[in-house]
Image (cartoon, rainbow, N blue to C red; front, side, top):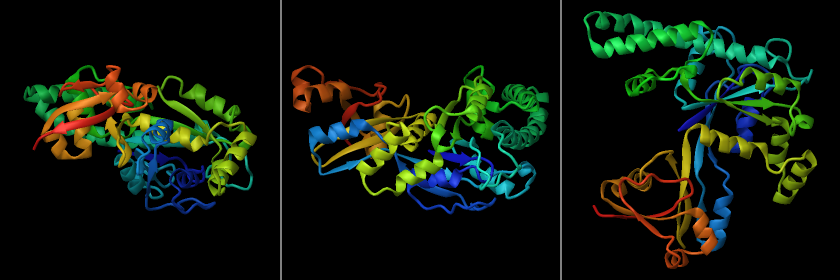
Length: 364
């Protein structure tokens, strides 16, 4: 599962990517600095891991991860191939969610591709390009499905109805994610269309250091604009985050954060939000060899969770032994959880909860 960072050129995307991944994507003060997308595998910050490590004292610890993709800046006309439009749009299509970075700071030394700072205009520029590309694809698909619908094909009739609704929505300059599928058939179709504007989105307001805690007038404008979008808005000073990653020690970083009035780096908040945006959650395995966080889709069953470790675990699944994270921490060990009756044996229908500490029995 991948989350792609998008935005206009020079809004701080590559610098943010470097903060998140500690990779060194090229960042410079001119458009199209990033051409090929950079991919970073990023650890998901989780304080529960520290507690499990403290209790179990394993030989190694393995965090959950999320893939973050740094996609080059879009410009007006990208949907028609302007700039490096087609390539960029293809990169976005391959991602499962979008992190949309908006410039919300004034700085005369950093050029703005449209001449001045205006996050509302910038957001609309990107939205329109993505909507136009989706509209082009929807209209092509409509041409094909109309012929089948005329013959009375029931599936084609359902698809034509949904495509017409999507088309009308896009023509009103609204994104496809604002459409709610009316039944399971429409849900499956919607997923199959692979529309860019149907992907979940998270807005990152890149602010100056002094606005990192409370935001500023630009952030207020963005929040007002997206209030009906069911999208989270995160305030981040990307420049300050870059400075934090350069510091050698944990203590130095904490002092820097305290001076800014922050409890943790904004990058950590963003990574967790991206993980949630991708509809991911974590379960743990905890033994003396390894304490590990495993990534699964929200709503995954016990066999599906087992399959993340190895496909044989899912094929030969017998049962799952489950302890809730809170119980594991409260009682301090698997043995004490058993004594207290907090050790559960679950079958194939069990829906895994975020934070479950699990062990699987299987036979292949």
